[in-house]
Image (cartoon, rainbow, N blue to C red; front, side, top):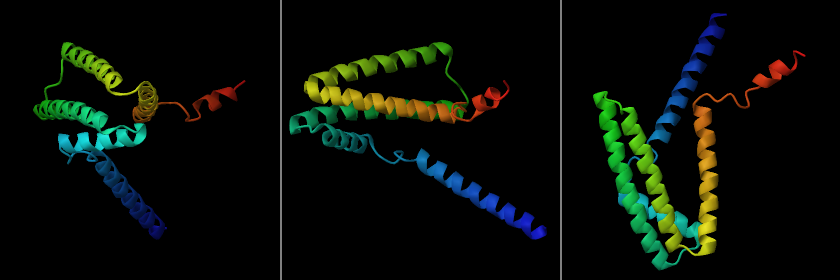
Length: 158
């Protein structure tokens, strides 16, 4: 009995350490890249996906560099606020959300100028899929009740 308890404790500790390592690896996925490196990688991925020519790649890379620098600035501000323990007010959250949506609209308009009609449609479709995938991941992280069988429990009660 003692061996069984000891073995189960060892297994639980081992699985917890592995899970913590995986979470740490995911969080620091792009943390070490500079904005220039991020822009280059994003541009190359887009060039492969949409078959961009050289002129398009240069324009997209400029745009990606600008947005990567802005993201880095906001990330630094958020980390500073987190360390200071000062959160954002509702008005500040609203301003940030509004600014983010305005930037998304400008980004979309700029992409429409750079890409051909077919490339733009393909880009929009891939963005929609990525957004859906991101929302699904976010829902799972926040304890979404979808797919956990809770409906099944109540259907059997007649």
